[in-house]
Amino acid sequence: MANFRGVDYLHIDSQFSEEEKMVRQTARQFVEERVMPVIRDCWREGQFPTSLIREMGKLGFLGANLQGYGCAGMSNVEYGLLMQELERGDSGIRSFVSVQGALVMYPILTYGSEEQKQRWLPRLQSGEAVGCFGLTEPGFGSNPSGMLTRARLDGDHWILDGEKTWITNGSIADVAVVWARTEEGIRGFLVERGTPGFSTSELHGKLSMRASITSSLSFSGCKIPKSAILPGATGLKAALSCLTQARFGIGWGVIGAAMDCYETARQYTILRKQFDDKPIASHQLVQDKLAYMITEITKAQLLALHCGRLKDEGKLEPAHVSMLKRNNVAMALDCARLSRDLLGANGIMDEYPIMRHLCNLETVKTYEGTDHIHALVIGERVTGIPAYR
Image 1 (cartoon, one colour):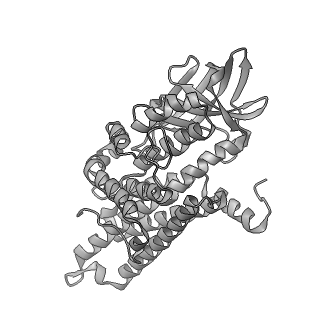
Image 2 (cartoon, helix red, strand yellow):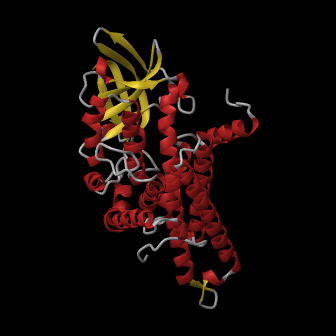
Image 3 (cartoon, helix red, strand yellow):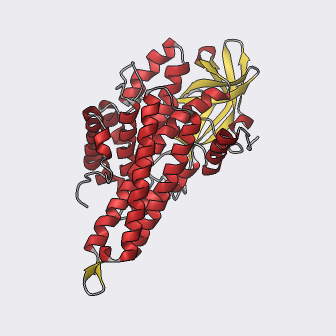
């Protein structure tokens, strides 16, 4: 397929500043030159392209919308466009950047001590260090408040016991942001690789997010210094605030996956000929699917853009992000399925990106809050009644 030129049916580009379009173009070029040549083999082999981490750091992709400590200080719309382009390459690439920035650097910046910020943020921003976020447990996904991982104070140290799972970057992380129950409630801790009592194991057998590292974290009498606690991270609300940052990036990112599927299908149907040597794009049923996809992508773009502007103004609420994530992931899955259908048997071949995106998006629909959980968040917002309690 020719180099990607964007999907803009409704002249949405007119709403972006030159700086925003420059960020998008930088990310687009990175994806074309560095991600696309390797991502099919990475997905086949179940490997994350770790060689790209430092490059993404140099380009300012890591912690891009954070201020200070070497971070790029992008606006949230610029950050969203970055996520869009990275997920057009692969959800695993966007997921790495999202975890590093929204789930590791953000809580350190927001809830950490100055010593913690100085020590970790510059290294995480440059890609010298990698982080992970330990909240989900084997028995507690959608209900993190039920976590069993515990931390008890023992003199000048904390002792952690428990297990976390489905942790992106877990087995390569230099530092883990870990949430545990204490006598004072749920608190956040920084646990470094190599700490006695802390071990990781990589999850295998995934049929989705194959170009992403997914791990379990285990803590057995794990002894960390008293200073490892994030002083400002008190209660589950702190952990959920990090997830809100990540969900915002997902709401933008999946647009990129949908764009890649749509554009692949559009070009394919113009070139593919059947029935009297006519392109299948000339048939009504094909055009109906393309019309549906471009309409849904356009609506998702407008939703993401408005949420980005609200976030830059300090007006975006968690319930808004739930709508963004829920709607746009469902849209991207629809586009992937319709695009697969338009390619027929070729749609299942990894020569084309569609099946890879489709499999990845099944996971994206689940993590950072399932479709059902976000529906209940929206339901509570419009009725005032929390149905999930």
